[in-house]
Length: 260
Image 1 (cartoon, rainbow, N blue to C red):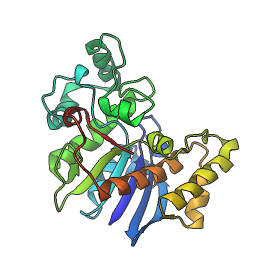
Image 2 (cartoon, one colour; image 1 turned 180 degrees about the vertical axis):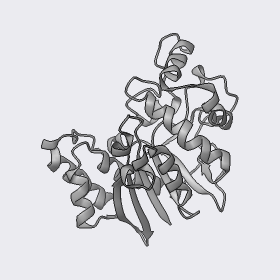
Image 3 (cartoon, helix red, strand yellow; image 1 turned 120 degrees about the horizontal axis):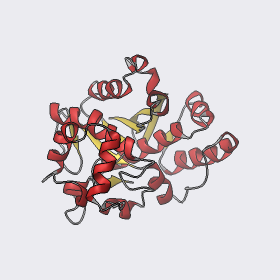
C-alpha cells in the first residue's frame, strides 16, 4: 500500500509551501521514499500547483491512502448544504473566491469563528475560515476535493464508504497528531533544526517509520517545518487506513472528521 502525506497550503506561493511525503507499507514499517514540495510536480511550475497536486493523486495506485492537512468541511452553522457531498460538489459555484468565502462564513456565523465538532475533539488550532486558514480550506475544497469527488476516483472517509478501486483520502492535522504524541513543541524556524530532529526521531520509533538519510536531511533542513508536517501527515494517514470506524455522533457526516 502506498501512503502519502500532504501538508497543504492555499498561499500565493503554494507550490513552494505544499509538501508531499510518499512511502510504502512494508511489513510493520512505513518506508518513506521521498519528500518534495509541490513545485517539483509536473505542471506546478506553470503556476498550477493545485491542478498538479490533483493530477498526482489521480495517478496514485488505487489502494493508496492520502492524508491532507486542510479542513474538508465547514461548521454546520455556516453552510446550507444538506450533505457533505453536496457541499463539496457545489463549492466552486457557491464561492467566487477565497475572500468572499470567508466573508460569507463570517456573515452566516454572525461574525463568530465557529468550530466543527471534530476541531474540538482533535484540538485543531483554528476554525476552518480563520484568517490564517481560510485560503487553505477554500482551495482544498474547490481545487482538490471537488474534482476528485466529482470524478469518483477517491473515497473520502468517513463521509464516503471505503470501496475497492478508489484511493482513500482522509483529513489529518499534524499539530493535532503531535499533541497526541506529546510532541507539540516549537519546531518551525532556522534555529529549531534540532527540535525537528527530535520530533522525527520520536516518530521513527513510535510510528515505525523508515526514513532514508537524504530524505531526513531535506526534512530537517526545511526551516518552515512543512516537510516535517508532511511526514506527520503520512503517519496519520497510515493509521487511518488501518482502521476507519464510524465516528460517534452525526456531525461528521456534514462537517468532516480529522484523523489523528
